[in-house]
Length: 78
Image 1 (tube, rainbow, N blue to C red):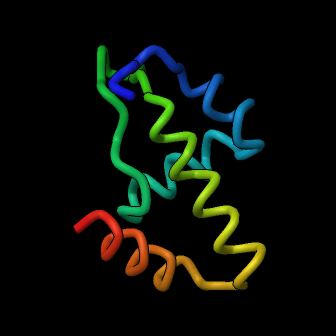
Image 2 (cartoon, rainbow, N blue to C red):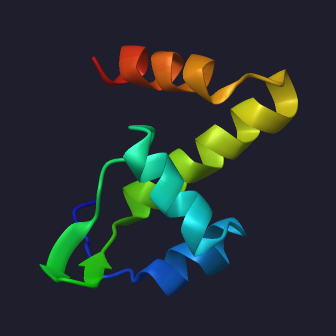
């Protein structure tokens, strides 16, 4: 899963999220940043898409706030 070939556009299409939402999740610490290749360019892996699907699932199925989702994901990562 170390394939860093996805652009932001690919991530948005795969998840149904906007670019702004993905950037917000990165800033909030819910999602690791992409691999920067320039000032305005980064690449993402399939793991980013899986994590975004997990975030959406927790929001919609369990109605959890982002702070609780972050705590769950941080706990799972450790």
